[in-house]
Length: 459
Ligand SMILES: NC(=O)C1=CN([C@@H]2O[C@H](COP(=O)(O)OP(=O)(O)OC[C@H]3O[C@@H](n4cnc5c(N)ncnc54)[C@H](OP(=O)(O)O)[C@@H]3O)[C@@H](O)[C@H]2O)[C@@H](O)CC1
Ligand SMILES: Nc1ncnc2c1ncn2[C@@H]1O[C@H](COP(=O)(O)OP(=O)(O)O)[C@@H](O)[C@H]1O
Ligand SMILES: [K+]
Image (cartoon, protein in one colour):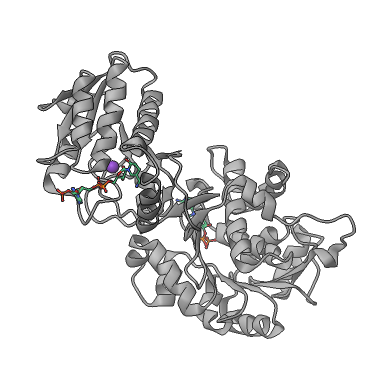
């Protein structure tokens, strides 16, 4: 599991550790990890030209000590101090190692180390820092802890900021490493363990081993009904394709059986494509809404009346309030969530975390906000971010497959938060598997799920 802690949590853990360690030891751990990460990116130190952008705080201190490490290995290291003060020990260490402090010609560097500001940043980047970023445009950047200019604890971005190739963070991930738009500014994120003892994290991201432990697997004595039956109320005469794709997601083999309860003409198409699918009957979870057209409200009503967990997608999201307080997963994209909350889509896309949490609280259900890094929020504010996937997944019908997949996990007995986050992880990873860097369509994603599940580590 990747865990993202808040700045106050990190500060508290840092204070605890600082009290037990010799002075400066924590920064040395951070700077050493940073120095080796820069070395990795450069391939070698000797003769390489490194520019440090140094702010007044400990973030700049990390950059200076890492610069000293690189200078001792033969790199030409220069520091551009952006503030009237800088970490004194770091400045002395860089000087002692042969690094230079002062006037720089930015175009000539192999890498820029962004030590402008880390978890101590407040508000927009100052003009001096913005000018420095403009001067080094085009040079690869390693960000220290966080890309300067992004909001560390929300993942929001308001104004100029660093766009890094690599971000080296310390002790734990922060929200900005997972949640867009800030996550897009991080590049590859490397975590350096500095020994912090941290509490439970409010934001996390499942990894393959976590999914392997959560994904339902049949027991020796299972039969199809004990594995769970998922029902699909999606598609209509106008949109039969939505029925096919929702069923394709539900019929990836993770539940024991799939029922289709919708338009008769769509049922014929569903049966032709998925002969194993049966008609209406008792289920352990419903998937409602995609392509339901005018039938969405009735479908939500009947599914809620059944008392089993449900996925509410697409057309049915307009009636999501009917599922309030039920075990439910609502699966809007940004435009749909904007309508559910009566705000502009741009507001949702600027503040993913805030809006996913707000909707989860307001609808008293798990809300899965679809995007590049999908955000899954519980009513109590706990969040999982999906980091699997590929931009090729932005294709019509991909959301229908996701709804069906999550429904099958609900039917198999996962709670809504687990079903949504595991389903989203599998969906993204299946898309990557199917795509192999090339185009895919929604049905390819569903077709790749069984092979993907087979590659998961055995828990
Ligand atoms: N926590 C840990 O466990 C460990 C933490 N470590 C490291 O410490 C870092 C945190 O250091 P920190 O607390 O000194 O704050 P930091 O991010 O350097 O910034 C503060 C200074 O920036 C300035 N400034 C503020 N806003 C600004 C803006 N918008 N635009 C421009 N400047 C701005 C402001 O300056 P001032 O207002 O004084 O001019 C303020 O003094 C952390 O990210 C990690 O790298 C590791 O070494 C070891 C383990
Ligand atoms: N840029 C992107 N990178 C990765 N995944 C994306 C990106 N854009 C969208 N997605 C994913 O693609 C899917 C699109 O679903 P949705 O918007 O509901 O489409 P549709 O309604 O056509 O099915 C979602 O799972 C979403 O998370
Ligand atoms: K930084």
